[in-house]
Length: 254
Length: 321
Ligand SMILES: Nc1ncnc2c1ncn2[C@@H]1O[C@H](COP(=O)(O)OP(=O)(O)OP(=O)(O)O)[C@@H](O)[C@H]1O
Ligand SMILES: [Mg+2]
Image 1 (cartoon, rainbow over the protein chains, first blue to last red):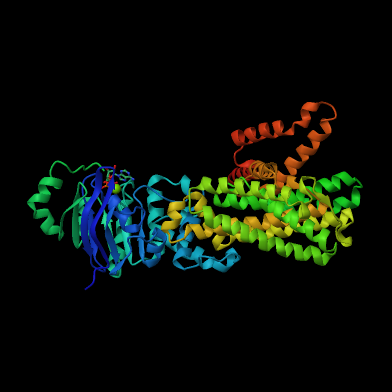
Image 2 (image 1 turned 135 degrees about the vertical axis):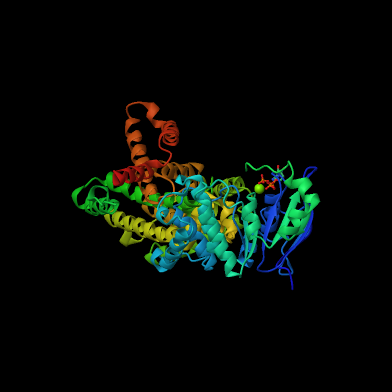
Protein backbone atom coordinates (compact mmCIF):
# COMPACT_ATOMS: atom_id res chain seq x y z
CA UNK A 1 0.00 0.00 0.00
CA UNK A 2 1.07 3.54 -0.69
CA UNK A 3 1.85 5.75 2.28
CA UNK A 4 -0.56 8.70 2.59
CA UNK A 5 2.20 10.89 3.94
CA UNK A 6 5.90 10.55 3.32
CA UNK A 7 9.00 12.64 3.89
CA UNK A 8 12.39 12.14 2.34
CA UNK A 9 15.45 13.46 4.19
CA UNK A 10 13.42 16.43 5.34
CA UNK A 11 15.70 19.10 6.82
CA UNK A 12 15.34 22.68 7.95
CA UNK A 13 18.20 24.81 9.17
CA UNK A 14 17.98 28.06 11.11
CA UNK A 15 21.52 29.28 10.84
CA UNK A 16 23.63 26.32 11.92
CA UNK A 17 20.85 24.81 14.01
CA UNK A 18 18.80 22.00 12.45
CA UNK A 19 15.61 21.43 14.43
CA UNK A 20 14.57 18.84 11.85
CA UNK A 21 17.47 16.90 10.42
CA UNK A 22 17.12 14.41 7.56
CA UNK A 23 13.87 12.97 8.75
CA UNK A 24 12.48 10.27 6.47
CA UNK A 25 9.16 8.77 7.47
CA UNK A 26 6.21 6.94 5.99
CA UNK A 27 2.70 7.16 7.36
CA UNK A 28 0.17 4.57 6.21
CA UNK A 29 -3.47 5.52 5.59
CA UNK A 30 -5.91 5.26 8.49
CA UNK A 31 -3.23 4.71 11.09
CA UNK A 32 -2.70 6.46 14.37
CA UNK A 33 0.89 7.55 14.93
CA UNK A 34 2.21 9.44 17.91
CA UNK A 35 5.35 11.51 17.90
CA UNK A 36 7.18 11.84 21.17
CA UNK A 37 10.37 13.57 22.12
CA UNK A 38 11.71 16.02 24.71
CA UNK A 39 11.03 19.75 24.55
CA UNK A 40 12.77 21.33 21.63
CA UNK A 41 13.20 18.02 19.81
CA UNK A 42 11.66 19.50 16.67
CA UNK A 43 8.16 17.99 16.80
CA UNK A 44 6.27 21.20 16.11
CA UNK A 45 8.79 22.17 13.47
CA UNK A 46 8.21 18.84 11.75
CA UNK A 47 4.47 19.58 11.71
CA UNK A 48 5.16 23.03 10.29
CA UNK A 49 7.08 21.41 7.47
CA UNK A 50 4.35 18.86 6.81
CA UNK A 51 1.55 21.42 6.74
CA UNK A 52 3.52 24.07 4.85
CA UNK A 53 3.95 26.79 7.48
CA UNK A 54 7.69 26.33 6.98
CA UNK A 55 9.56 25.44 3.81
CA UNK A 56 12.37 22.90 4.18
CA UNK A 57 16.00 23.70 3.47
CA UNK A 58 16.24 20.34 1.75
CA UNK A 59 14.27 17.15 1.39
CA UNK A 60 10.76 16.43 0.21
CA UNK A 61 7.22 16.01 1.49
CA UNK A 62 4.82 13.73 -0.37
CA UNK A 63 1.13 13.17 0.07
CA UNK A 64 -0.44 10.13 -1.60
CA UNK A 65 2.72 9.84 -3.65
CA UNK A 66 2.43 13.39 -4.99
CA UNK A 67 5.13 15.89 -4.11
CA UNK A 68 3.74 18.79 -2.05
CA UNK A 69 7.00 20.29 -0.76
CA UNK A 70 6.33 23.64 -2.40
CA UNK A 71 2.57 23.93 -1.94
CA UNK A 72 1.10 26.63 0.28
CA UNK A 73 -0.66 25.67 3.53
CA UNK A 74 -3.99 26.54 1.90
CA UNK A 75 -3.42 24.09 -0.96
CA UNK A 76 -2.34 21.33 1.40
CA UNK A 77 -5.48 21.80 3.44
CA UNK A 78 -7.55 21.51 0.29
CA UNK A 79 -5.72 18.29 -0.53
CA UNK A 80 -6.86 16.90 2.79
CA UNK A 81 -4.30 17.71 5.47
CA UNK A 82 -5.59 19.65 8.47
CA UNK A 83 -3.78 20.58 11.63
CA UNK A 84 -4.23 22.08 15.04
CA UNK A 85 -1.68 24.32 16.69
CA UNK A 86 0.20 23.87 19.92
CA UNK A 87 0.17 27.59 20.54
CA UNK A 88 -3.44 28.62 20.36
CA UNK A 89 -4.10 30.06 16.97
CA UNK A 90 -7.63 31.35 16.50
CA UNK A 91 -9.39 34.54 15.38
CA UNK A 92 -9.43 36.56 18.62
CA UNK A 93 -12.01 39.26 17.85
CA UNK A 94 -14.49 36.95 16.14
CA UNK A 95 -17.00 34.92 18.09
CA UNK A 96 -16.37 31.26 18.85
CA UNK A 97 -19.17 30.42 16.43
CA UNK A 98 -17.62 32.47 13.63
CA UNK A 99 -14.26 30.82 14.22
CA UNK A 100 -15.69 27.37 13.57
CA UNK A 101 -18.01 28.64 10.84
CA UNK A 102 -15.01 29.79 8.83
CA UNK A 103 -13.61 26.29 8.95
CA UNK A 104 -17.00 24.78 8.02
CA UNK A 105 -17.28 27.18 5.11
CA UNK A 106 -13.82 26.22 3.89
CA UNK A 107 -14.73 22.54 4.10
CA UNK A 108 -17.88 23.21 2.05
CA UNK A 109 -15.73 24.82 -0.61
CA UNK A 110 -17.57 28.15 -0.41
CA UNK A 111 -14.62 30.36 -1.12
CA UNK A 112 -15.70 33.24 -3.31
CA UNK A 113 -19.31 34.02 -2.66
CA UNK A 114 -19.51 37.79 -2.44
CA UNK A 115 -23.21 38.44 -2.06
CA UNK A 116 -24.92 35.54 -0.32
CA UNK A 117 -26.81 36.58 2.78
CA UNK A 118 -26.01 34.89 6.09
CA UNK A 119 -29.42 33.15 5.86
CA UNK A 120 -28.40 31.24 2.79
CA UNK A 121 -25.66 29.57 4.78
CA UNK A 122 -27.57 28.92 7.96
CA UNK A 123 -26.54 25.28 7.75
CA UNK A 124 -22.93 26.39 8.32
CA UNK A 125 -24.00 27.78 11.66
CA UNK A 126 -25.82 24.61 12.50
CA UNK A 127 -22.79 22.48 11.71
CA UNK A 128 -20.55 24.83 13.67
CA UNK A 129 -22.84 24.50 16.66
CA UNK A 130 -22.73 20.68 16.43
CA UNK A 131 -18.96 20.77 16.42
CA UNK A 132 -18.89 23.12 19.38
CA UNK A 133 -21.05 20.70 21.27
CA UNK A 134 -18.73 17.85 20.37
CA UNK A 135 -15.84 19.65 22.04
CA UNK A 136 -18.02 20.78 24.96
CA UNK A 137 -18.17 24.42 23.96
CA UNK A 138 -21.88 24.40 23.09
CA UNK A 139 -22.67 27.26 25.46
CA UNK A 140 -19.83 29.49 24.33
CA UNK A 141 -20.80 30.24 20.72
CA UNK A 142 -21.45 33.94 21.25
CA UNK A 143 -18.31 34.71 23.26
CA UNK A 144 -15.38 36.35 21.55
CA UNK A 145 -12.57 33.86 21.10
CA UNK A 146 -10.16 36.10 23.00
CA UNK A 147 -12.37 35.90 26.09
CA UNK A 148 -12.12 32.12 26.34
CA UNK A 149 -10.05 30.44 29.02
CA UNK A 150 -6.90 28.76 27.81
CA UNK A 151 -8.35 25.25 27.91
CA UNK A 152 -11.42 26.41 26.02
CA UNK A 153 -9.27 27.87 23.28
CA UNK A 154 -7.65 24.48 22.92
CA UNK A 155 -11.07 22.94 22.43
CA UNK A 156 -11.99 25.58 19.89
CA UNK A 157 -8.81 24.74 18.04
CA UNK A 158 -9.91 21.09 17.86
CA UNK A 159 -13.42 22.02 16.69
CA UNK A 160 -11.90 24.04 13.84
CA UNK A 161 -9.73 21.13 12.83
CA UNK A 162 -12.65 18.68 12.94
CA UNK A 163 -14.73 21.05 10.82
CA UNK A 164 -12.25 20.70 7.98
CA UNK A 165 -13.00 16.97 7.81
CA UNK A 166 -9.60 16.28 6.33
CA UNK A 167 -8.26 12.78 5.75
CA UNK A 168 -5.06 13.57 7.59
CA UNK A 169 -5.14 15.19 11.01
CA UNK A 170 -2.06 16.66 12.64
CA UNK A 171 -2.69 17.25 16.34
CA UNK A 172 -0.05 19.23 18.22
CA UNK A 173 -0.49 18.58 21.94
CA UNK A 174 -4.26 18.96 21.85
CA UNK A 175 -4.79 18.66 25.59
CA UNK A 176 -1.88 20.81 26.75
CA UNK A 177 -3.10 23.50 29.10
CA UNK A 178 -6.51 21.94 29.69
CA UNK A 179 -7.68 21.34 33.22
CA UNK A 180 -7.44 17.73 34.33
CA UNK A 181 -11.21 17.24 34.40
CA UNK A 182 -11.49 18.32 30.77
CA UNK A 183 -8.83 16.05 29.36
CA UNK A 184 -10.85 12.78 29.36
CA UNK A 185 -13.70 14.25 27.32
CA UNK A 186 -11.31 15.56 24.67
CA UNK A 187 -9.52 12.21 24.62
CA UNK A 188 -12.91 10.67 24.04
CA UNK A 189 -13.41 12.92 20.99
CA UNK A 190 -10.07 11.83 19.61
CA UNK A 191 -10.86 8.20 20.33
CA UNK A 192 -14.13 8.49 18.44
CA UNK A 193 -12.41 9.90 15.38
CA UNK A 194 -9.88 7.11 15.56
CA UNK A 195 -12.59 4.49 15.86
CA UNK A 196 -14.32 5.75 12.74
CA UNK A 197 -11.25 4.31 11.08
CA UNK A 198 -11.18 6.58 8.05
CA UNK A 199 -8.66 9.15 9.22
CA UNK A 200 -4.93 9.21 9.41
CA UNK A 201 -3.90 10.83 12.65
CA UNK A 202 -0.54 12.16 13.76
CA UNK A 203 -0.39 13.17 17.38
CA UNK A 204 2.30 15.01 19.27
CA UNK A 205 1.86 14.35 22.95
CA UNK A 206 3.78 14.27 26.21
CA UNK A 207 1.15 12.32 28.14
CA UNK A 208 2.52 8.79 27.92
CA UNK A 209 -0.61 6.92 28.96
CA UNK A 210 -2.56 8.66 26.25
CA UNK A 211 0.05 7.93 23.63
CA UNK A 212 0.32 4.28 24.55
CA UNK A 213 -3.38 3.55 24.56
CA UNK A 214 -4.08 5.23 21.23
CA UNK A 215 -1.14 4.63 19.00
CA UNK A 216 -0.45 1.94 16.47
CA UNK A 217 2.95 3.42 15.73
CA UNK A 218 5.30 5.55 17.77
CA UNK A 219 8.01 7.84 16.53
CA UNK A 220 10.74 9.23 18.72
CA UNK A 221 12.29 12.51 17.74
CA UNK A 222 15.46 13.63 19.43
CA UNK A 223 17.54 16.67 18.52
CA UNK A 224 15.89 16.87 15.14
CA UNK A 225 16.63 13.25 14.30
CA UNK A 226 14.14 10.46 13.94
CA UNK A 227 15.56 8.14 16.58
CA UNK A 228 13.11 5.25 16.29
CA UNK A 229 9.86 4.28 14.63
CA UNK A 230 8.00 1.17 15.77
CA UNK A 231 5.04 -0.20 17.70
CA UNK A 232 4.61 1.28 21.16
CA UNK A 233 5.58 -2.02 22.82
CA UNK A 234 8.86 -2.26 20.95
CA UNK A 235 9.69 1.39 21.57
CA UNK A 236 9.14 1.01 25.28
CA UNK A 237 11.43 -1.99 25.26
CA UNK A 238 14.14 -0.37 23.15
CA UNK A 239 17.26 0.39 25.15
CA UNK A 240 18.32 3.27 22.94
CA UNK A 241 15.03 5.07 23.43
CA UNK A 242 15.04 4.38 27.12
CA UNK A 243 18.42 5.94 27.45
CA UNK A 244 17.95 8.92 25.23
CA UNK A 245 14.41 9.86 25.94
CA UNK A 246 12.55 8.04 28.63
CA UNK A 247 15.48 8.29 30.97
CA UNK A 248 16.17 11.47 32.88
CA UNK A 249 15.62 13.70 29.90
CA UNK A 250 11.87 13.42 29.78
CA UNK A 251 10.30 16.49 31.23
CA UNK A 252 7.12 15.28 32.85
CA UNK A 253 5.90 18.72 33.72
CA UNK A 254 4.83 19.81 30.28
CA UNK B 1 -31.11 38.90 25.94
CA UNK B 2 -33.46 41.77 26.50
CA UNK B 3 -34.27 43.99 23.58
CA UNK B 4 -34.90 47.56 24.41
CA UNK B 5 -36.01 50.21 21.99
CA UNK B 6 -33.48 52.58 23.52
CA UNK B 7 -30.59 50.50 22.33
CA UNK B 8 -32.07 49.33 19.05
CA UNK B 9 -29.67 50.74 16.51
CA UNK B 10 -32.15 50.03 13.68
CA UNK B 11 -34.64 52.35 15.28
CA UNK B 12 -32.08 55.12 15.61
CA UNK B 13 -30.96 54.66 12.04
CA UNK B 14 -34.57 54.78 10.84
CA UNK B 15 -35.18 57.98 12.74
CA UNK B 16 -32.01 59.54 11.38
CA UNK B 17 -33.06 58.58 7.87
CA UNK B 18 -36.49 60.19 8.30
CA UNK B 19 -34.90 63.36 9.66
CA UNK B 20 -32.50 63.50 6.73
CA UNK B 21 -35.27 62.93 4.20
CA UNK B 22 -37.35 65.63 5.82
CA UNK B 23 -34.51 68.09 6.14
CA UNK B 24 -34.75 69.84 2.75
CA UNK B 25 -38.45 70.53 3.34
CA UNK B 26 -37.97 72.29 6.65
CA UNK B 27 -34.66 74.06 6.14
CA UNK B 28 -33.87 76.58 3.47
CA UNK B 29 -30.19 76.80 4.34
CA UNK B 30 -28.34 76.19 1.12
CA UNK B 31 -25.01 75.72 2.83
CA UNK B 32 -26.41 73.11 5.22
CA UNK B 33 -27.83 71.20 2.28
CA UNK B 34 -24.49 71.26 0.49
CA UNK B 35 -22.65 70.21 3.65
CA UNK B 36 -24.94 67.22 4.15
CA UNK B 37 -24.56 66.27 0.50
CA UNK B 38 -20.79 66.25 0.98
CA UNK B 39 -21.15 64.18 4.14
CA UNK B 40 -23.09 61.51 2.23
CA UNK B 41 -20.52 61.31 -0.51
CA UNK B 42 -17.52 61.27 1.81
CA UNK B 43 -19.29 58.61 3.86
CA UNK B 44 -19.18 56.29 0.84
CA UNK B 45 -15.52 57.08 0.30
CA UNK B 46 -14.79 56.36 3.97
CA UNK B 47 -16.78 53.11 3.82
CA UNK B 48 -14.69 52.00 0.87
CA UNK B 49 -11.59 52.71 2.94
CA UNK B 50 -13.07 50.75 5.81
CA UNK B 51 -13.27 47.65 3.59
CA UNK B 52 -9.48 47.82 3.38
CA UNK B 53 -8.50 49.05 6.80
CA UNK B 54 -11.31 47.90 9.04
CA UNK B 55 -12.28 44.61 7.46
CA UNK B 56 -9.12 43.27 5.87
CA UNK B 57 -6.44 45.12 7.82
CA UNK B 58 -4.76 46.61 4.74
CA UNK B 59 -3.42 50.16 4.97
CA UNK B 60 -3.52 52.35 1.89
CA UNK B 61 -1.87 55.76 1.65
CA UNK B 62 -3.17 56.43 -1.83
CA UNK B 63 -6.86 55.66 -1.73
CA UNK B 64 -7.48 59.15 -3.14
CA UNK B 65 -6.43 57.86 -6.56
CA UNK B 66 -9.74 56.03 -6.98
CA UNK B 67 -11.65 59.05 -5.78
CA UNK B 68 -9.71 61.17 -8.26
CA UNK B 69 -10.17 58.76 -11.15
CA UNK B 70 -13.90 58.86 -10.49
CA UNK B 71 -14.04 62.64 -10.25
CA UNK B 72 -11.94 63.31 -13.35
CA UNK B 73 -13.60 60.66 -15.52
CA UNK B 74 -17.07 61.98 -14.83
CA UNK B 75 -15.96 65.58 -15.20
CA UNK B 76 -14.24 64.91 -18.53
CA UNK B 77 -17.20 62.97 -19.92
CA UNK B 78 -19.66 65.70 -18.99
CA UNK B 79 -17.36 68.43 -20.24
CA UNK B 80 -16.17 66.83 -23.46
CA UNK B 81 -19.10 64.80 -24.53
CA UNK B 82 -22.36 66.23 -23.29
CA UNK B 83 -23.91 67.19 -19.99
CA UNK B 84 -26.66 64.59 -20.14
CA UNK B 85 -27.70 61.74 -17.91
CA UNK B 86 -26.45 59.32 -20.55
CA UNK B 87 -22.97 60.80 -20.46
CA UNK B 88 -23.03 60.64 -16.68
CA UNK B 89 -24.10 56.99 -16.60
CA UNK B 90 -21.55 56.00 -19.21
CA UNK B 91 -18.89 57.82 -17.21
CA UNK B 92 -19.88 55.77 -14.14
CA UNK B 93 -19.36 52.59 -16.14
CA UNK B 94 -15.96 53.79 -17.29
CA UNK B 95 -15.09 54.67 -13.70
CA UNK B 96 -15.93 51.13 -12.64
CA UNK B 97 -13.74 49.68 -15.37
CA UNK B 98 -10.80 52.01 -14.69
CA UNK B 99 -10.82 51.74 -10.92
CA UNK B 100 -11.35 47.98 -11.24
CA UNK B 101 -8.28 47.61 -13.42
CA UNK B 102 -6.07 49.90 -11.34
CA UNK B 103 -7.05 48.38 -7.99
CA UNK B 104 -6.61 44.88 -9.39
CA UNK B 105 -3.13 45.59 -10.76
CA UNK B 106 -1.92 47.27 -7.59
CA UNK B 107 -3.31 44.38 -5.58
CA UNK B 108 -1.66 41.72 -7.72
CA UNK B 109 1.67 43.54 -7.60
CA UNK B 110 1.90 44.18 -3.87
CA UNK B 111 -0.52 42.16 -1.80
CA UNK B 112 1.62 39.04 -1.87
CA UNK B 113 4.38 41.04 -0.20
CA UNK B 114 4.54 42.45 3.30
CA UNK B 115 1.71 44.85 4.06
CA UNK B 116 3.69 48.08 3.85
CA UNK B 117 4.32 47.50 0.13
CA UNK B 118 0.64 48.10 -0.56
CA UNK B 119 0.76 51.30 1.48
CA UNK B 120 3.86 52.53 -0.34
CA UNK B 121 2.77 51.58 -3.83
CA UNK B 122 -0.66 53.16 -3.43
CA UNK B 123 1.06 56.33 -2.23
CA UNK B 124 3.34 56.31 -5.26
CA UNK B 125 0.62 55.55 -7.80
CA UNK B 126 -1.68 58.22 -6.35
CA UNK B 127 1.26 60.62 -6.76
CA UNK B 128 1.60 59.51 -10.38
CA UNK B 129 -2.05 60.23 -11.07
CA UNK B 130 -1.64 63.65 -9.51
CA UNK B 131 1.26 64.41 -11.85
CA UNK B 132 -0.69 63.00 -14.78
CA UNK B 133 -3.63 65.28 -13.98
CA UNK B 134 -1.27 68.25 -13.81
CA UNK B 135 0.61 67.50 -17.02
CA UNK B 136 -2.08 66.20 -19.33
CA UNK B 137 -3.30 69.75 -19.83
CA UNK B 138 -5.37 69.07 -22.98
CA UNK B 139 -7.67 66.85 -21.03
CA UNK B 140 -7.45 68.18 -17.48
CA UNK B 141 -6.53 71.85 -17.87
CA UNK B 142 -3.66 71.32 -15.44
CA UNK B 143 -3.74 72.05 -11.75
CA UNK B 144 -6.33 74.84 -12.12
CA UNK B 145 -8.89 72.24 -13.11
CA UNK B 146 -12.10 73.14 -14.89
CA UNK B 147 -15.79 73.70 -14.34
CA UNK B 148 -18.43 71.83 -16.29
CA UNK B 149 -22.19 71.53 -16.60
CA UNK B 150 -24.07 68.69 -15.04
CA UNK B 151 -27.23 66.97 -16.35
CA UNK B 152 -30.26 69.22 -15.96
CA UNK B 153 -32.14 66.80 -13.74
CA UNK B 154 -29.38 66.96 -11.15
CA UNK B 155 -29.04 70.73 -11.18
CA UNK B 156 -31.44 71.36 -8.37
CA UNK B 157 -29.60 71.27 -5.02
CA UNK B 158 -32.42 69.35 -3.38
CA UNK B 159 -32.44 66.70 -6.11
CA UNK B 160 -28.71 66.34 -5.76
CA UNK B 161 -29.11 66.06 -2.01
CA UNK B 162 -31.50 63.14 -2.42
CA UNK B 163 -29.42 61.53 -5.13
CA UNK B 164 -26.40 61.58 -2.79
CA UNK B 165 -28.44 60.40 0.16
CA UNK B 166 -29.75 57.38 -1.71
CA UNK B 167 -26.35 56.77 -3.22
CA UNK B 168 -25.01 56.45 0.31
CA UNK B 169 -27.87 54.23 1.48
CA UNK B 170 -27.52 51.91 -1.52
CA UNK B 171 -23.74 51.69 -1.15
CA UNK B 172 -24.12 51.05 2.56
CA UNK B 173 -26.41 48.09 1.97
CA UNK B 174 -24.35 46.71 -0.89
CA UNK B 175 -21.14 46.87 1.12
CA UNK B 176 -22.91 45.50 4.19
CA UNK B 177 -24.10 42.58 2.14
CA UNK B 178 -20.53 42.09 0.93
CA UNK B 179 -19.01 42.17 4.42
CA UNK B 180 -21.67 39.74 5.69
CA UNK B 181 -21.11 37.34 2.81
CA UNK B 182 -18.92 34.23 3.11
CA UNK B 183 -16.12 36.14 1.38
CA UNK B 184 -16.55 39.12 3.68
CA UNK B 185 -16.15 36.84 6.67
CA UNK B 186 -12.88 35.53 5.29
CA UNK B 187 -11.62 39.12 5.00
CA UNK B 188 -12.20 39.58 8.71
CA UNK B 189 -10.46 36.31 9.41
CA UNK B 190 -7.45 37.58 7.45
CA UNK B 191 -7.43 40.76 9.51
CA UNK B 192 -7.50 38.68 12.67
CA UNK B 193 -4.96 36.01 11.80
CA UNK B 194 -3.64 35.69 8.31
CA UNK B 195 -1.65 32.50 8.78
CA UNK B 196 -4.53 30.70 10.44
CA UNK B 197 -6.88 31.71 7.63
CA UNK B 198 -4.50 30.21 5.15
CA UNK B 199 -4.23 26.98 7.08
CA UNK B 200 -8.02 26.62 6.83
CA UNK B 201 -7.53 26.43 3.06
CA UNK B 202 -8.23 30.03 2.01
CA UNK B 203 -5.88 31.57 -0.52
CA UNK B 204 -5.12 34.87 1.17
CA UNK B 205 -3.93 36.75 -1.89
CA UNK B 206 -7.21 36.29 -3.76
CA UNK B 207 -9.18 37.73 -0.89
CA UNK B 208 -6.94 40.72 -0.46
CA UNK B 209 -7.27 41.49 -4.14
CA UNK B 210 -11.05 41.21 -3.89
CA UNK B 211 -10.98 43.70 -1.00
CA UNK B 212 -8.72 46.02 -2.97
CA UNK B 213 -11.03 45.95 -6.00
CA UNK B 214 -14.28 46.37 -4.06
CA UNK B 215 -12.75 49.32 -2.18
CA UNK B 216 -11.47 50.80 -5.43
CA UNK B 217 -14.84 50.54 -7.19
CA UNK B 218 -16.77 52.11 -4.33
CA UNK B 219 -14.21 54.91 -3.96
CA UNK B 220 -14.39 55.62 -7.70
CA UNK B 221 -18.17 56.01 -7.57
CA UNK B 222 -17.91 58.40 -4.63
CA UNK B 223 -15.41 60.45 -6.65
CA UNK B 224 -17.90 60.72 -9.54
CA UNK B 225 -20.63 61.94 -7.22
CA UNK B 226 -18.22 64.38 -5.63
CA UNK B 227 -17.42 65.98 -8.99
CA UNK B 228 -21.13 66.28 -9.75
CA UNK B 229 -21.83 68.18 -6.54
CA UNK B 230 -18.96 70.60 -7.10
CA UNK B 231 -19.44 70.96 -10.88
CA UNK B 232 -15.72 71.48 -10.80
CA UNK B 233 -12.66 69.29 -10.61
CA UNK B 234 -8.99 69.97 -9.95
CA UNK B 235 -5.94 68.01 -8.89
CA UNK B 236 -6.84 68.31 -5.20
CA UNK B 237 -8.96 65.16 -5.62
CA UNK B 238 -5.75 63.16 -5.95
CA UNK B 239 -4.16 64.78 -2.88
CA UNK B 240 -2.91 62.89 0.16
CA UNK B 241 -5.34 64.95 2.24
CA UNK B 242 -8.23 63.11 0.66
CA UNK B 243 -6.77 59.78 1.78
CA UNK B 244 -6.04 61.14 5.25
CA UNK B 245 -9.63 62.35 5.55
CA UNK B 246 -10.87 58.83 4.84
CA UNK B 247 -8.42 57.41 7.36
CA UNK B 248 -9.54 59.88 10.00
CA UNK B 249 -13.23 59.33 9.28
CA UNK B 250 -13.03 55.55 9.58
CA UNK B 251 -10.93 55.68 12.72
CA UNK B 252 -13.01 58.31 14.49
CA UNK B 253 -16.25 56.64 13.45
CA UNK B 254 -15.07 53.13 14.22
CA UNK B 255 -13.15 50.78 11.95
CA UNK B 256 -14.73 47.58 10.74
CA UNK B 257 -18.29 48.79 11.19
CA UNK B 258 -19.20 50.54 7.87
CA UNK B 259 -21.76 52.60 9.76
CA UNK B 260 -18.89 54.21 11.64
CA UNK B 261 -17.67 55.67 8.37
CA UNK B 262 -20.94 57.58 8.01
CA UNK B 263 -20.66 58.90 11.55
CA UNK B 264 -16.99 59.73 10.99
CA UNK B 265 -17.73 61.55 7.76
CA UNK B 266 -20.38 63.65 9.50
CA UNK B 267 -18.13 64.44 12.47
CA UNK B 268 -15.09 65.38 10.44
CA UNK B 269 -16.93 67.52 7.90
CA UNK B 270 -18.96 69.26 10.61
CA UNK B 271 -15.83 70.04 12.62
CA UNK B 272 -14.20 71.18 9.41
CA UNK B 273 -17.09 73.53 8.64
CA UNK B 274 -17.11 74.78 12.22
CA UNK B 275 -13.40 75.55 12.14
CA UNK B 276 -13.77 77.38 8.83
CA UNK B 277 -16.36 79.63 10.48
CA UNK B 278 -14.12 80.22 13.47
CA UNK B 279 -11.28 81.18 11.16
CA UNK B 280 -13.00 84.54 10.78
CA UNK B 281 -12.34 85.11 14.48
CA UNK B 282 -8.76 83.90 14.69
CA UNK B 283 -6.37 82.67 12.06
CA UNK B 284 -5.29 79.67 14.14
CA UNK B 285 -8.58 77.96 13.27
CA UNK B 286 -7.66 78.05 9.63
CA UNK B 287 -4.91 75.55 10.37
CA UNK B 288 -7.45 72.83 10.71
CA UNK B 289 -4.85 70.15 10.14
CA UNK B 290 -3.54 70.94 13.62
CA UNK B 291 -6.93 70.25 15.11
CA UNK B 292 -7.41 67.13 13.08
CA UNK B 293 -4.01 65.92 14.17
CA UNK B 294 -4.98 66.46 17.78
CA UNK B 295 -8.35 64.82 17.23
CA UNK B 296 -6.66 61.86 15.64
CA UNK B 297 -4.30 61.40 18.57
CA UNK B 298 -7.12 61.71 21.08
CA UNK B 299 -9.24 59.24 19.15
CA UNK B 300 -6.50 56.65 18.96
CA UNK B 301 -5.62 57.10 22.64
CA UNK B 302 -9.03 57.24 24.24
CA UNK B 303 -11.41 55.46 21.98
CA UNK B 304 -9.53 53.33 19.48
CA UNK B 305 -12.75 51.60 18.51
CA UNK B 306 -14.29 54.86 17.38
CA UNK B 307 -17.71 56.25 18.12
CA UNK B 308 -19.66 53.30 16.77
CA UNK B 309 -17.34 50.78 18.41
CA UNK B 310 -17.82 52.51 21.74
CA UNK B 311 -21.60 52.65 21.38
CA UNK B 312 -21.65 48.95 20.59
CA UNK B 313 -19.69 48.23 23.72
CA UNK B 314 -22.10 50.23 25.86
CA UNK B 315 -24.96 48.44 24.22
CA UNK B 316 -23.43 45.08 25.12
CA UNK B 317 -23.02 46.18 28.74
CA UNK B 318 -26.57 47.50 28.81
CA UNK B 319 -27.92 44.21 27.50
CA UNK B 320 -26.05 42.20 30.10
CA UNK B 321 -27.08 44.50 32.95
N1 LIG C 1 11.29 29.87 13.23
C1 LIG C 1 12.33 29.41 13.96
N2 LIG C 1 13.51 30.06 13.96
C2 LIG C 1 14.55 29.62 14.69
N3 LIG C 1 14.50 28.54 15.46
C3 LIG C 1 13.36 27.83 15.51
C4 LIG C 1 12.21 28.23 14.77
N4 LIG C 1 11.22 27.35 15.01
C5 LIG C 1 11.73 26.45 15.87
N5 LIG C 1 12.99 26.72 16.17
C6 LIG C 1 13.87 25.92 17.06
O1 LIG C 1 13.71 24.59 16.71
C7 LIG C 1 13.82 23.79 17.87
C8 LIG C 1 12.70 22.81 17.91
O2 LIG C 1 11.49 23.47 18.23
P1 LIG C 1 10.06 22.79 18.23
O3 LIG C 1 9.09 23.82 18.58
O4 LIG C 1 9.89 22.07 16.96
O5 LIG C 1 10.19 21.74 19.41
P2 LIG C 1 9.10 20.76 19.99
O6 LIG C 1 9.65 19.39 19.85
O7 LIG C 1 7.78 21.03 19.40
O8 LIG C 1 9.12 21.14 21.52
P3 LIG C 1 7.93 21.24 22.58
O9 LIG C 1 7.75 19.87 23.14
O10 LIG C 1 8.45 22.17 23.62
O11 LIG C 1 6.72 21.76 21.87
C9 LIG C 1 13.89 24.71 19.05
O12 LIG C 1 15.23 24.78 19.48
C10 LIG C 1 13.44 26.03 18.50
O13 LIG C 1 14.09 27.08 19.16
MG1 LIG D 1 6.04 21.75 20.04
